[in-house]
Image 1: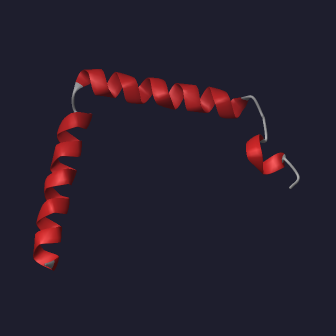
Image 2: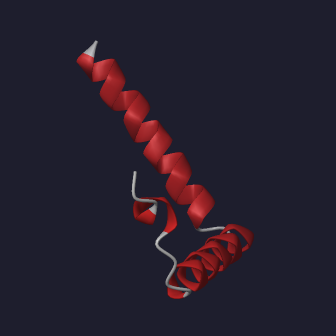
Amino acid sequence: MGMMRNLIASGVAAKVVQELRKPQNQAKIKQFIRDFQAKNAKGGKGQAGRGY
C-alpha cells in the first residue's frame, strides 16, 4: 500500500512540474504573485485584526 502511494505521489509531482514549465502557466503564477504582493503591500490586517 505504501509503495503504491509513493508511485502515485511521484506521478502527481511529475505532472505538476510539467505544468509549471509551460509559459502560459508561468505567466499565471507570476501574475498571482504580483497580485498577492500588492494586496499585502496595502497594509491591511485582514481577518487577524478584527478583534474577536
